[in-house]
Image (cartoon, rainbow, N blue to C red):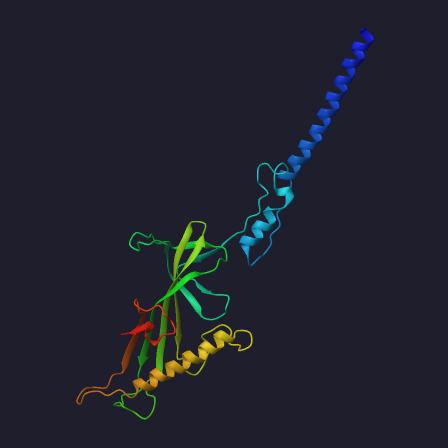
Length: 253
């Protein structure tokens, strides 16, 4: 009986030793997989989709990665007040004039100097106002047969909702152009084939601005009053009209 008991005890010890070695190898590999790795930078235009695809790989999940330290992350860009940006349609250049938390109560929303941006879509954009500032090139008394209002500046203010790590943020931007009635360099890409909507929009905008200058040169002033040499026009959305195609959408002051 003693040899049998000794033999049985010996086999059990051998199994424990072998099993311990196997577990040691397995846990060592798992530990190496979660801690011994090299970081590789990937540049992407869609961070959210890229993060989702990379983190869905098998070696980033349990049991191969318990600690989650190999989770893919993207370094966001920083949008700050005063910085210049442009959108994917390669149209206007915008200058950020304000960043605040999106809230129904504008008085309670807190302002911020900057925010983290992951190339998310700009949502619910609304134009606040458009200013047209005019300057006369001479002192002739209107109406005149020529366009004497040749110098002008157009400033447009709008805001959009942008998602960030801190939640929805309200970003206020400003676009401006000067003396654009004869050129189209105020947009980034002026190509009727690749950016037809932007190209056509600039033609309509320049035609409208030329009409404004022509109308300004035909105004009349009371006698014995000096002719105006500067002027300003302000356009704001009409709160009672949501149809952007309606001429009454904007109110002129």
